[in-house]
Image (cartoon, helix red, strand yellow):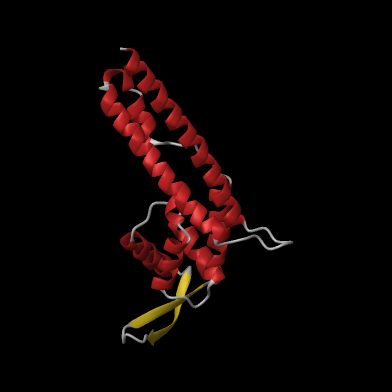
Length: 181
């Protein structure tokens, strides 16, 4: 997925250097789409260059005196972008929350500790919703356009709200059960 993100960003920002692309991924919260680190980003950038899907157009000295490598997508990179769009655009997978795996053994786990795990999920979900709210408050869809990234984040927010409601309901049921004991 990281190659798709890099190629797409280079289509949107021809001539950008690696740090600019990485900063855009972080600013746009692409971590909600794919896990990436600085190291995995630069590894993928290097692989794209080695495969000839992007090429360096210039090497500039920045204000700090460090050289920057600016990239553009190549014709074969555009072809690869098209393939990756089909690959990921047609893929649909089950949501795989790791919490579900832990919940399989909830009956065999201390209920007070289980409540702590659920509270952790509630806290993390509220944080995600707050980040999405922050992004959505700073953007708006222009009339006559479709801002797919904004709509994706609106959809993600809706899913998080459903999860939050479920976690809170689960917590309340367990607390009710414990108070009856």
